[in-house]
Image 1: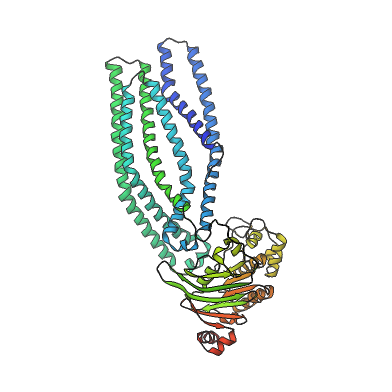
Image 2: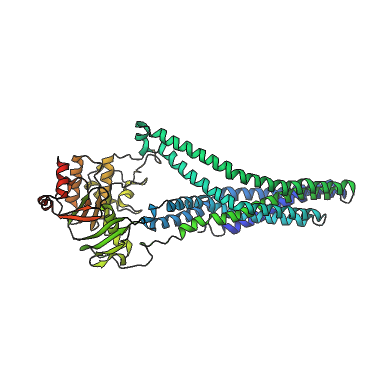
Length: 567
């Protein structure tokens, strides 16, 4: 999780240079010029000192400007990219069941924000801490010979500020977490108002007012949170500033130096200027140091969000290699059950066998367990009991990636991505363009076949391609043709299609995938009558099975549902 080799070292060296420069300009430079006047040095000597100082300081500013505006931002972006990549990889492998919980979604959301902001802040916090310590040390060393009281007062001021900041750390962390959760909800509500998939509903219904009302309540709740917790933090911050820097440095130290110079006559003009400037610099450095130490502790607490996600161990996509999946022959489901965290059963004692090149359909009312069964077959979930055998071998003992590579999927809620047509069909970075073109032609969408490098988005690309709903379905079908896997799972892929296009869709599937095993879920029973077998599910169990004709002759629930749809 590094940015550039040596980035932190170079950044630390840059802060050392800045610390030396700051101590020189704020404490030594003017005091030395006054000291030269007191010692009757020549004007040429003083001007030479000023010129050399200007040249050296100018060079350090130029180097700092290049470092902060050219080198550092690039390294920070690489650091964020590295952490985001690690987070994305973890999200890709974590069990799908985790997405069913609000706590997981919040952890992922907050961890994503920490990757973008907190990682850079942690490095910056460390460097700011280093700079404050060095500046403080150099300033104290430069004036301790002239007066030792001021550094002691500064140390007392720092101790008080540090103690106060430590008391505020836990409050800041809880406040930050609460605010971020409110901001997450506000971000969701704002997206609804401008994302294209919500545009028609927003314009044709009263949902806009509902969303705006929720946004108003969210804003009010956030304001209450800020007044309550932010006010407490504000009071402690004011007390820390007044008691630490204001009383001890601004008033006591300045008064002490004035008395020592003007009343006691024990300090020269150059010494007075040096110590007074040092006093101001010490005050600034101590305030910065105290704040950075508090932020350092705060970062340590908040970075646990990222570690929470980082430490999530997937049960399904484990690192063990497992067996490779051989070409498909049979798939056996042996008395599998699936139970949700609330102890409700999604599947109960399901048993079936599917053979190579078979075309089977799962039907039933909503919530009957059809989609849950598909997720178990794909091992997006694992069974609570029972097992799934692929070619006679337990699926759980197989390498998850090679096992899933036996399947192509076509879901109702498929997505197209803001990348090229070719990458959307191949679903990888290195598409076989001829194979992509053939798949698109088979799916009967020549418009896309002629623009394989076209971006499927007008949001990020002015000349992007905008496909209709039917064309998007065909691109999803082209993915299946491109992958050419042994088993195709279709979960309501035609739910948004009219009858004519649905028939054309299934004609394409059964025409080009004759030698494949097809498992399909559909609520339109007329589209699955040609399947070799049909399984009717209810309350997580298979209660009827057979060909369309056999099920109609039984005059059971399948037959009643079919006739109801037909009428």
